[in-house]
Amino acid sequence: MSTAIQASAVTHADILALSHRLLPQEHDLIFHTPFFSRLPRRRLYDPTRLRVSRVIISLTPTPGVYTAMSEDSRQSSVLFLHRPWQLERRRVPRGTLVLQSHTVFDALYTTGWNNAFADAHGVRNDGRICLKGHKGDPERAIGLVGRLEQPRKMREYAMELAEAFGGYETVWMGEDDERDAHTLVSLNAFTPEILDRVAALIPESLPLSGVICLTGATRAAGLEDAQKRGMGVVAVGHQRCEFWGIRYFAREVEKVFAQRLHVVVVDEPEPPRPPKAPKVTIATVDSLQGEAVTS
Image 1: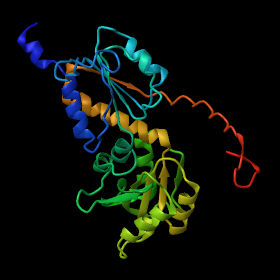
Image 2: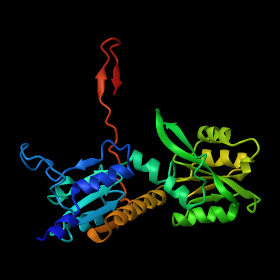
Image 3: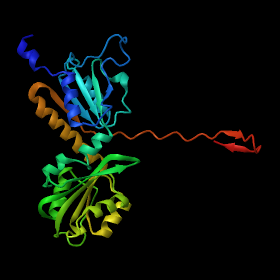
Image 4: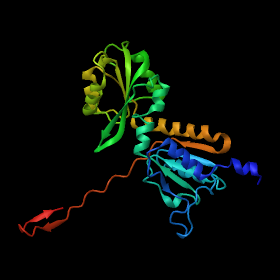
């Protein structure tokens, strides 16, 4: 093989470097290495020596993911999953690297602290506020509050947001859908407590009715609270906002590596999960009371 071709080859190390740049706080990026449980421990995984010709990107390990990995055994793959936990490792071809990101990906590339989306939809760069703190983690980024570069009509802007995600679950704009929207609030969690925090960040000189909230799944309590405050709401649905993220991730990979590798996006809906087994109760004897109890 010529030196020119060797120089253009993409390695696992190149994919890892890009992934760390796109997901800067992801500390558990590698989910499965090519040699996971397959070779003696003395054989170390060296990402600089393994080439890749295909990157497969999906929310979960759907049937289409296994099909994509096995379509051409001559191509070495890197697989990126948002939720990897149901992956059947035995079905992963030898030599495949599997990467994952859940919380960090949610924060950066769905609805939340998604600066890439804000850049594309008229939010000013200066003055953006990152909402932090959720589920016991005070540093977890869950939202973005940003002024629009110029006021937009509520209906027009709401439809633009919904179209960017390919649809919506709920859009609520109130009686006056021709009023001006001045602030986009992009949220990973949509609760009255978080909307309290949002409202406290809006200057008194600006009406809350000019705030439009973008979120994933419709939450009844959050929707009701936003309506009482007069805020607009666009809830695009949980998987729609995740699909936006994997497509953006794919575009970034293509942008960096151009024609040097093939990018496959598997955008199948997540298969339904099997029902949880019912909890088994076992009768025991309470040694203190002498009575039968269940656990």
